[in-house]
Image (tube, rainbow, N blue to C red):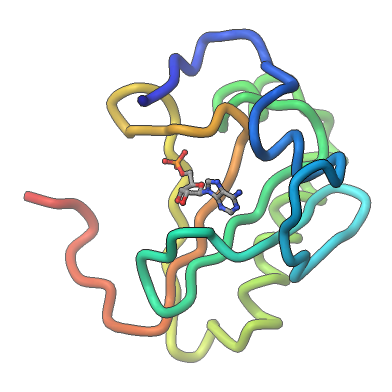
Length: 125
Ligand code: AMP
């Protein structure tokens, strides 16, 4: 079910549980601001999720409320994860679903990194 991006943060969401170590995930990256782990249902040969450590529902919530340090730290983490995975030369796509029409399902901000094949048009037509 897509979420409502205007909702309050729910600390029982699955990515909050991953951050607290209550649910396992392979941490590909971990710093003060972000972690990255493989998507459990990959939609490309490489499909990585990067999430901020802070409690933010969506891109909207994060861009409105996060500190400059959190925003810089998170954006740099996304870039570092892709770079360290060797994705810059072949290319990659970032996606951050926000709210109902985008079909965001997990109410903790996450950026998808897709790579590993020609990714086709940006959106289904
Ligand atoms: P979105 O539709 O943008 O909210 O994407 C949520 C993503 O989280 C989907 O691609 C799911 O496959 C992924 N996902 C859900 N649970 C887990 C989990 N426990 N570990 C890794 N990825 C997950």
